[in-house]
Each structure stands twice: as C-alpha cells, then as structure tokens.
Length: 126
Image (tube, rainbow, N blue to C red):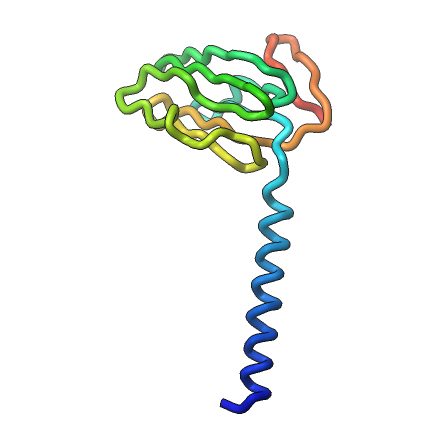
C-alpha cells in the first residue's frame, strides 16, 4: 500500500469512530422516568427525580421497584431465578430491566414533566 492509501484508510476509520461515538451519545441520555410494562401493557410510569417504592403485583407474580437518587432497580421478585434483581440500575434512556417469568420490562425514558392520571398511575407528559 502507498502512504496516501494508508492515510486515507486511517482518516476513514477515524471518521467512522467519531460518527459512532456521536450516535451513541445522542441515543443514551439521562432518563427522566421509568416505564414499566407487563405483557406489553403499561402498568406505571414513574419519575426518577423522586425517591419511591413501587409494588408491581400481576397474575404472573410480585416485583418491587425502588427508585433512589435518579436510578430504578428491582429489590424484590418472587420469580424462580431472581435475575431481574441482579441487572444494572436504570439511569439512562433505553436501559432496561427484564423479568421474563413475570413478563415485565422496565425501561428508562425521557421526561419533561409529570402529572397523575385518573388511575393514580404517574404519567409523564411532554
């Protein structure tokens, strides 16, 4: 290879690396709320700005979600493996905690404001 070819290749690799970093940074912001779904249906949306404890009881079982200092994590689950309690805390947009036996997915989402709807479930608006 010629010197010019190597410089061109190095430049292209550098540009591709920078583009990947920019895309990843844009996708993973700080989450403002956590959405919890069971069987694809939303059972709760809670702000990460306020510390709270939430019991999530469904026909599949019991989970306990804790929100502390801007992070959401599972502290209790009566599923056989308890893997959801070992998963990383949710702090960023798109981060998830999954409990397969209970068909539960908690996901970090962006939020601009918060209100309470008629069902008493905190809903994020914006």
